[in-house]
Each structure stands twice: as structure tokens, then as C-alpha cells.
Length: 196
Image (tube, rainbow, N blue to C red; front, side, top):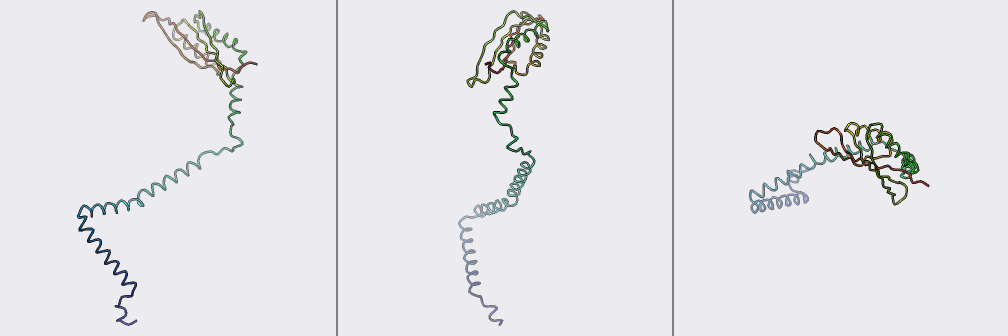
């Protein structure tokens, strides 16, 4: 290659030099119009654009990795062994006693009160049947007289004896501040299968 040719600009190099000169001219014009605040804004925008690949993208990759590890750690249950809602309902209904056994449950409730030395004067119950007809609820209200420990033991015994009973409400009242005896209203819900 001759020395004269090496110093001469090729057509592509001339275009690149012209583009570079045009870009430098455009930057000078913009700098003159925008001033220092515009130059600072551009510098901050470029710095923020540089932070995305340096900080945000690695964080997003770390989140994706954590999600993948979590999904891998979760136990997988095959669709065949997963409990179906009807199976769960059937197992619940087998746990519930038959509605025909409610008199026995009521007798056991009064027996628990007697075992704890509580006085039972009277009581009331109401029946609620669910719209779909698969569960019957007997709501039992029982006024009791005794001390706090007797009431507590009574409630514990009833709940321990029957898993299908729910303590709905307990209200205490004393005649005087120093009295050991309480008047209590205890409400239980008994859930049962409807009888034939």
C-alpha cells in the first residue's frame, strides 16, 4: 500500500467522519440550548440507564431463582391421590353422629353438668337444617349455676367428649362482686347428619 493511499480517507471512513462531526455539532447546539441543567439531566438519565443492568436485572434473576427453588421444594401430589371435595364431605359426615342420637348427646351434656356439680334448671334447643340437607345443627342453650372452675371443667368435658360440638357463647353474671357462684348461659352447637 502506498503512503499516499494510507493517508487518504476511504468513502466509508469519510461518511463516519462526517457523521461524527454532525453528531458533535448537534451536541454543541443542544448543550448551548439546554445549558448546565440539561447536561446534568442527561448525565443522570445515562447513569440511571446504566443502573438497570447492574442492579435491577440481577435482582430480578435472583427472584426468579428463588421462585424456581420454592416450586421445586413444594411437595407434588399426584392428581389421583388428591382428596376430592366429595370425599372430604363424606369423611366429615361419617365423623358426625346421626340426628337420631341427639337425645343421647343431650343426656350426656346434662350428665357432664351433674358431674361438675352444676345446677341445671332448664334449657332450650333449636334446630337448623342446612339448605342442601346434609348437615343438621342443634343449638342448645343451657343456664347453669356454679363456680368458675366447675363451668370451665364442664365446657372442657363436653368439647373433649364430642368432636362435632362447637362452643358458641358463654355469658357470666354474679349477683354480688364477692360471690363465688355464677349464673352462666352456655350455648353449644351440635352438628349431625340428618336422620332418615
